[in-house]
Amino acid sequence: MNLRKAAGGIGLMAAIAVSLSVTAPAASAQPTSSDTTTGAELQDDFNGDGYSDVAFPVPAAGLKSYEGNQDGGGAAYDGYVAVMYGSADGLQTSSKQVFDQEKPGIPGDAAQGDAYGSSVTSADLDQDGYADLIVGAGGDDGGRGSLSVIWGGPDGLSDSTWLAQGDAYDDGIGHLAEAGDFNGDGTPDVVTSFGDTGLHVLTGPFDRTGAPAGGTRAVDGPAGDDWMTDLAAGDVNGDGVTDLVSTTGRDDASRVAYWAGSPDGLTAGASVSGLDGAGDNLDVGDVNGDHHADIVIGRPDGNFGSENPLPAAKGGMVTYVPGSADGPVPAGATRINQDTAGVPGVAEEDEADGSCDQFGAGVSVGDIDGDGYADVSVGVRAETYDDIEMTGAAVTLRGTADGLTGAGAQVFSEDTAGVPGIPQAWDFFGSATKLTDTDGDGMADLVVGASGEGESGDEDTTDGSIWVLKATADGVTPDGSFTFGVRTLGVPAHNGGGLGSEFAS
Image (cartoon, rainbow, N blue to C red):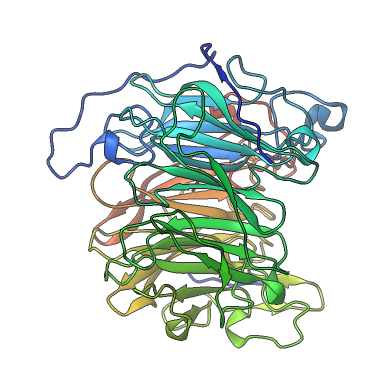
C-alpha cells in the first residue's frame, strides 16, 4: 500500500469458590501432531486443548452504567476483560467470555476508576495443566490496587481468587503485572508494580486460595525514575531463569531497567545505560536466534518537546537490544523508524500541530513465519493517508541472525485489500498489536487493536475493535482476516472505552 500522509504492603485473601456466570467453551480434542505444544506447556492455554487463547483487557470501559457514560457519553474506567479461545481454525468468536468485578465469583465490587484489566498476564499458577488468567486493577480501592486470578480448567476459565491487594493509596498493585519463573525452580511466580518503580514478587507455586508457597517480597527498582509504564519477562541472559525488563517515563524521560532472575529470585532493578529515550512500551523474545531473549522497545510519540531530538525517533521509533550472557547489550542496539530502508511509509511529525505517525505503539514479539527468528509487530496508530487523519496502520518487522531489520517489512490497515473495514479518521488502527499462535501451526498470527473504531462503523462511537490476520511461511496475509467489537462480545458500547487499546502480555 502506498501511504500518503498529512503532516501529521499486600493482603492475601481466601478463595471465593463460586462459579462464574459465563458461557465457557468446552475443550476440544487434543491435537495429535507431535509438533503441537500441549496445553500444560502453553502459558496462555486456559482450557488445555493445545491452542493459545487471547485476552482483551478494556480497563477504560465497563459493564455498569454511570451518569457519565449514559448513551455512550464517556468511559467508565471500572474495566472488564474479554477472552477468546484458539482452535485448529484460530480464534473462535463464539467462544467469548467476559469478566468484570460485577460477575459472580470475581472478587471485589466494580466501581468507576478501578481499571480492572489495567494489566493482564497468564501462567499455570497451580500447576494443574491449565493456564490461569492474572488480572490487575491498578485503580481499585482508591488507587491501592489489586491483583486476582481466574483459574483455567477443561471448560475454560472459572472461579477467581485474590492474589494481592494494596494497603495504602497509590500502592497501585496490579497497575502492571508479569508472570515467569524468576527463581528457576520450575514453577511460575508473579510480579506486580508497587508504588513508582518498585515491585512485589509473589513466589509460587500457588494453591487455590491464591497464597504463594514462597511468600511475597519487595524488590527495589532504580532510584529516581518515573512511574513504570511497562513490564516484560524473558530469559535475557540465557541462564534458564526468567528475567524482567521495565520501562519508565515517556519520550526523552523514558528509561529502561533490567531485573535479573536468580535462584534467590529477582535481583534489584538497574537502569540500562545507553537506552534513555528509547520508549515506554516493550516486549521480549529471541529475535536473532541465539537463545537469549532480546528486548524491543517502542517510542511512539516522536521528538515532541525534545531538547536533543533523536533522528531515529522522528515519527516514532522501535529500538532492538540484543540479549547476552551478561544481560542487555545496548551497544548492539538497532533503531528503526519509517525512514529505515524497507519499512513502508515515511517518518513524519509536525511540531506546529502536534501530529506524529506514532510508529512504535504496542510492540509485540513472535515468530510469524516459523523460521526460528522472532519477528516484531508495531502499531502506527496515528498514521494518516489518503487525507484520512489518524486512521492508523500496523507494520511487521522481520527477525534475522543479525537482529531486527526493515527488509521485508509489511504494512496493513483497513485500506489493505482483504482486510475488512473502512478506514475512517481517528480509528487508531494499530493502537496495540499482539503476535500469538492461535491455531497451533507454529506461526504467530497478528492481532491488531483500533481503539477509536466502532463496530457499527459510526466514526463518532469510539468503543474500539479488534482485527485478526493469519500468519503464513511468507508472512502475515490479509486473506481470511476478520474483525469484531463490543457487539460480538455482548457488552455495551462505551464512547472512549477503547477495546483494542492494549493486549495481555
